Amino acid sequence: IRRIGVLTSGGDCAGLNAVIRAVTHRAVGTYGWKVLGILDGTLGLMDRPLRYTELDLDGFAGHDILRAGGTVLGTINKGDPFNFPMPDGGFMDRSLDFVDGFHRLELDGLIVIGGDGSMRILKKLCDKGSIGMVGVPKTIDNDVEGTEYAVGFSTAVNVVTEALDRLQATAASHHRVMILEVMGRDAGHIAMNAGIAGGADVILVPEMPYTLDGITQRIRTVQAEGRSHALIVVAEGVKTLDGQSAMQRHTGGEMRYGGIGAYLSDHIEQATNIETRVTILGHVQRGGIPSMRDRLLASVFGVHAVDLLAQRRFGRMVAWQNRGAIDLPLEDVCIGPRCLDPKGPLVHTAHGLGIYVGEAGC
Ligand code: F6P
Image 1 (cartoon, rainbow, N blue to C red):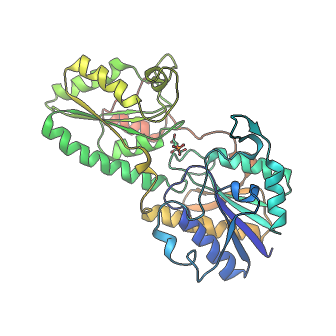
Image 2 (cartoon, protein in one colour):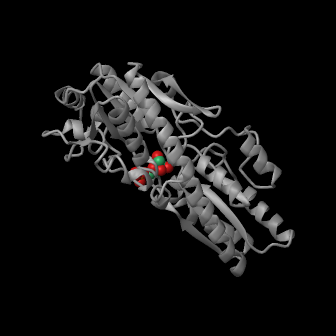
Image 3 (tube, rainbow, N blue to C red):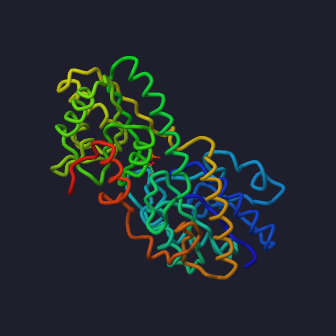
């Protein structure tokens, strides 16, 4: 191995730069390799001229980016080279451009920092082009299979927990129900973790269908216990008992971020007569200074990923399990989102705290 590439793919999150920094340190500092940072995810290798930047220890990748949110390399969400969106609305297979770009740069390996979807696409691409790939899991949703934690999750949970702390004060002052809508398209890890840590009364997640009655009953119980305010955390991808996405119902079929909170608010006000307000946290969850945990995880993953390339152990993803870094074959992790376990310890804890988390047994 002499030259490697590193790219970030899919939605950004805090801690990506810390991975890029760790990869650069290990590859350049320990092994003496050249590291090329591919710009804007898969695009950097598909575009002509190719778009990349050399990463070295005296440059920005060596020092200053540890604390910075986002990704200095840039990223795109809709960059599937097998199904690349064209300006006329159609799609085109540009996978060969990607493979050709990789070989033109004479790279010996590629580190992909990505979520569940990106990992799947990049694995297919690398298989097609005989590219030695190693994956590093990142996503605020924490839904990559095979790892207990992905880079970005911890910071996002801290942001949501702090939002709940702030909302609690204003909720109590005004005797209101506060609904906090958070990200989580397929999995409710952010909502469940931050909801418990932030003292929510209701936590709604995609894995556990809810009923409007269940929510209002919980709020009535809170009132009966002598409290005139309540906190609700809802993940964007929640579903009702009939399996419909509440957001789709609210928006007339369209699936987009932001909307479920307003739908719930209307119902709660009508049913309980308590004033209700909605906060959509949105992309605030993705930005900002990475938490200590994300910086640590990013650093561990970055070093481990480079070591895998050095050993020519391609086609693997680094992961965190049982207090340590491990690695797994990519085919074992590209199997769909890792969902919250409705029978797991967090849901059990939520039940124990009297939090409404949807219908039991679903
Ligand atoms: O996949 C992570 C995520 O944060 C989802 O929870 C959310 O639906 C999505 O990104 C939004 O991404 P964007 O607005 O960048 O398309």
